[in-house]
Length: 96
Image (cartoon, rainbow, N blue to C red; front, side, top):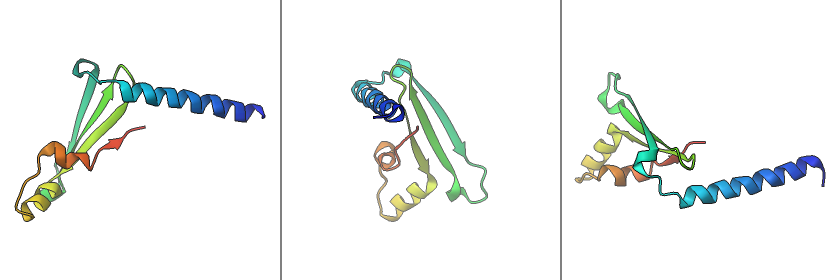
């Protein structure tokens, strides 16, 4: 095993430990920062979108939610509105 392979092994073990810590963390509100962003200056209001980027100061995990008026339009066409968080779950993404 050469030095590069040894370093890759150490990195993968450290990343596995970080992932375990982040999974077990409860991300308390007092330690989580939120950044709200939006793009609402479009001529077509259905192109407006918003997002929330979250960062846990305890474990370092970053994640976020995205939302747009297209979601409202699609839900209204079906005759029902989904709750914000339920609709957002399909847009949840990891931020690396």
